[in-house]
Image 1 (cartoon, rainbow, N blue to C red):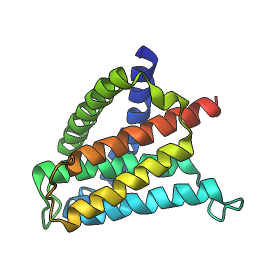
Image 2: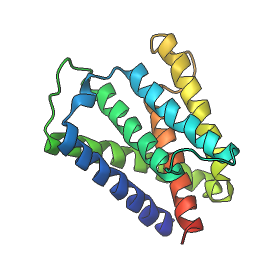
Image 3: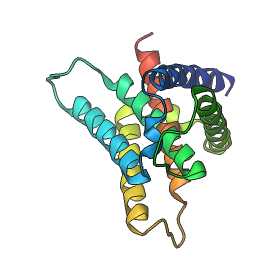
Length: 181
């Protein structure tokens, strides 16, 4: 699992680097987004990935990797929103946002390590397309939970679903990076 930990960290470093650059460009404007808006942004990214996987022709010269990065970053933003709440005006410095990003990524990595131990790295035998489908399934679950005003009877909450989406997207990126190596 040591390779998984290093590969995971490398993907997070790539995503966090882009997050920090976008914070420099835009500030924390994303802090005004309500959870359903973030969920919809993630949904758009996942749908585009699925389209790229199914279509022979691409009309925009961006591949799956940039979309998976978007899923990871929007999901981390959603976890931050869950913890801090939505605001009417941007309120975080780049340093504060980066600290929160790092905290959410670490919590999500711990979940991955625990599940990875129990599942024996089964994700390594999965296809990227299956990971994409699982992300879409999680998104539909989150939308249903949002429609239920955050209430569940026996299921995990929204936060666990965002964490799973992050982990599935990271697994997909590890696969894609291995394919391109």
